[in-house]
Length: 488
Image (tube, rainbow, N blue to C red):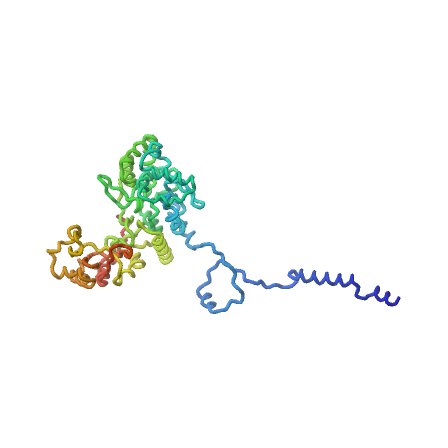
C-alpha cells in the first residue's frame, strides 16, 4: 500500500517521462525562433569595392567559406553603350549565310550587338538563333529563279538539309558566292519595311566585318540623315562605282525612303523582275545595289574609304593614308580579331568617353606596334614594292614579278643570299624606299610602307621578315600631329 501510494503521488512514472521527453524535443527543434543566429555565410551584393577597400582587405583571411558566385555575364558598359545619343537612330544590318552562321555570328552577339538597340540579321535561310530571328533575304526572289536557276542550287540544297535536320556547314563552298549576290536588293527593301520610323541610318555589314560603335556614332553626327546618302568604300566595276559590301555601307533615311518609294511607283513586281534579271547577269550584289540606287533614285555613292575598310590590321599599310582617320570597319576579320578590336573599343570608351574617336594610329599603337619590333621567322610581312629574284632558284618568277636580274647592281644581287644581306640592301636603299623587308633563299622583297603581315608556317614558302625600327618611327612621327579625317 505504501509503495502504491508513493507511485501515484510523485514518482517518475512512464507517462511523466514521456511528457518531459516531448518538451525537450520541442525546445530543440524550435530553437531558431528563440535563440539569436549569425548567418553561416555573409550576404553578398553586386558592388565593386573601391581600390582603397580592396587594397586594405587583400591580405585578410576570410572568416567564412565562399559561396558560389552569380555566373551571369555582365558588362557595366552594356546599358551605357545602348543609350549613347544617336544609338537608337541606327539600324545595324548583318548579312551572313546559313553555312557559316554558327561559326561567325556568336562573336557579334557578345560584342557589337550588346550595344546596338536595333539590329537585323539576314541570311539565305529562315532560321532562329537562340531567341533571335534570322531573316531569309532570298525568300522574296521570284520562283522563276529560285526553282531552276543554277545560282540557287545551294539554296535548294539548304532547304533540303533544313528539313532533314542536317549540318548546314557541310555545304560550304564556292556556290555560296553565286547565291550571295541575290541577297542585297531584297535585303534593302525588307530592312526598310521592318525598321521603325525613328531610324535615321541603315548600316550594312557582313559576318566577317568588324564595326566600331563609338566611331560610327560620332561619324554619323557629322551628316544630316534628311539628305540622301549612300556611303561606302569605293570600288569600280565597268561604269559603276559602288560601296564594297564586305567593307560595310551606310544609307540615310532620306535615301532609303526615296529608293523604296521608287520601287512602289514602278510597281514592286515590275521593279523586282527588272533587277532580278540584272542581278543574274552581274557578278556582285553590292554592284547591283549601286546601279539600282543611281538608276531608280539618282543616288550615287559618296566615297567613304578608308573609314570603311576592306583590309584588316594585318594587311593595312600603316601610313599617312590611314593614320589620322577613324576606322569604322575592317573586313575578313576572324572571331579572335573581332573580339580583340572590341576589347580595345571598350577600353578606349572607358578612358576617353563617347565623344573622342580613336584613329588608325591608336589601333596601331595598341594592337600592332609590338608585333613589328623584331625580325620574325616563318612570317610574311607583305613587302612588295621592290623584288629581287634569283631566276636560277625560282625559274619564271623573275619575268612574272621581279626586277630583271641582269639589270641589277652587284650589291642588289647580294640581297637574295641571306636574311642579313636583304636587310643590308633595305638599309642602303634609304628611308624613302625601304622600311621593311622579307627574305627566303633566292628572293628579297622590300617595301616603303609598314605592314604587319601574317605567319606562313603552314604555307609552302617560308619567309623571314624584318622592319627598320628608326625608319618606322620616323615615318609615323612625320605624320603627326593628327587632324581627325572624317571624310573619305
